[in-house]
Amino acid sequence: MKKVITYGTFDLLHWGHINLLKRAKALGDYLVVGLSTDEFNAKKHKEAYHNYENRKLILEAIRYVDEVIPETDWEQKATDIEKYDISVLVMGDDWEGEFDALRAYCEVVYLPRTKGISTSQIKNTKF
Figure 1 (cartoon, rainbow, N blue to C red):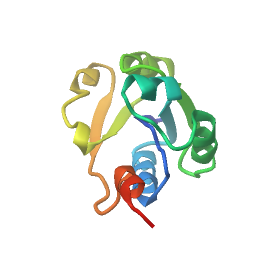
Figure 2 (figure 1 turned 90 degrees about the vertical axis):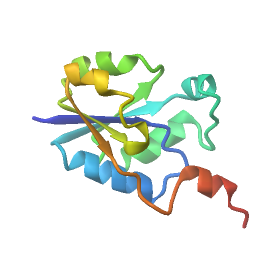
Figure 3 (figure 1 turned 135 degrees about the vertical axis):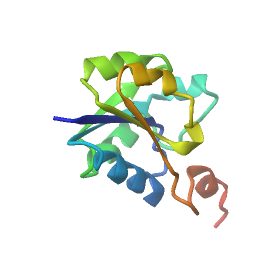
């Protein structure tokens, strides 16, 4: 079985997230999502609209996602790759080059972001 992993906050879920998850799942048979915990987001000076448990509940309902694990720090990726027997790490192309050192453990793929949508854009939209 070919396992894929990706990471993120996945707050205010939108079609860009779904596109990323669909394309990530297409690279293998099983998709693990490392979901940033509220504590990790605080360390990154980032605040999610929904708390970790609610974001996890939403992700687990998506057909492309097989497993959701907590992301608690930047350094855990290599450990997760080994622990979950990961073949492919997928990240958005805005992270291009940032995780190349992990090629020692698995294939690293940077996927283009979906144009025209972002969580920041949604948060800044006034209705």
